[in-house]
Image (cartoon, rainbow, N blue to C red; front, side, top):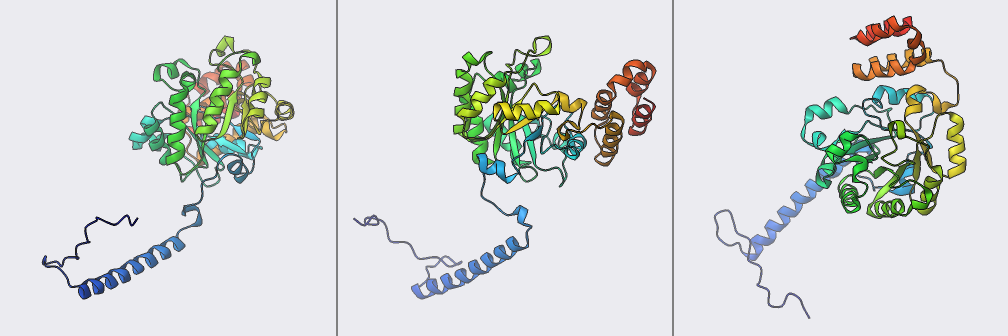
Length: 366
């Protein structure tokens, strides 16, 4: 049956003066509008051809297709608040780091405050592949924040692993892990609205391989919601500070074997030999380092590079990329930790330094 039966006949188009056009006038008007639309389409096509290829809309890759598109990275710089800033990321890239994450940023602040965005997110063309990490508990806000960086990164990450008290107070990080419906709704919303893939960084929900089912169920849900890469820290949120304990690589190995997306392992990496052993024993797709990389940015190269050289290179990069002084000072304290233990006066000098030049002088003296 014709679905148009019973519908009203379309009214004739009206002229500017309000009187109805004749059929001939309407046809002529359609011809004119058709020519205008054709010209507009030609203009849009020329504009698209003039745009750089990177700015054109490309199909969104997910999972292993995405992973392969960024070079199948095996060595990953973790997201670290105030520490994985641009200058540090560029230093680790010199020494074998194949993928880097920005520090965690608060989605609400990022979505609503231009000053916050300018102060907390910096990158450059050489800073790729790059994942930008956000925290938050509102799907709409998380997606809105991510859209500000979707043309300047390769993926956006959801922080579901921060175990600190501030995360509990702010209702984000590892304190969302038991709210499966909420976090899968965040993943689903971001995957639907953001042009780049969505990844997640989580922790184990319970201690012990025998108690892995809850973690597995969460991982299945994240994958089904659109997570393209999962990073699993092999500890629970309670395992921090003096209660840190060993990383459960076996649990991560099991999760990796059950999922159909790339899995990165975080935790328990101190040396390059640990990196190689982890990849061999667990079968994970990549190894993420935080603490060890902060102390030895050349970790992933497998080479011995003096702390003095690393400090000098970092200070050079900090100057080029205008790194925050607080981050610079924190990095230099870590790089030169051993020397500063026996040079208390220089430790005080470094602590009092206010400019890059002053930080450099104190570091050179150590």
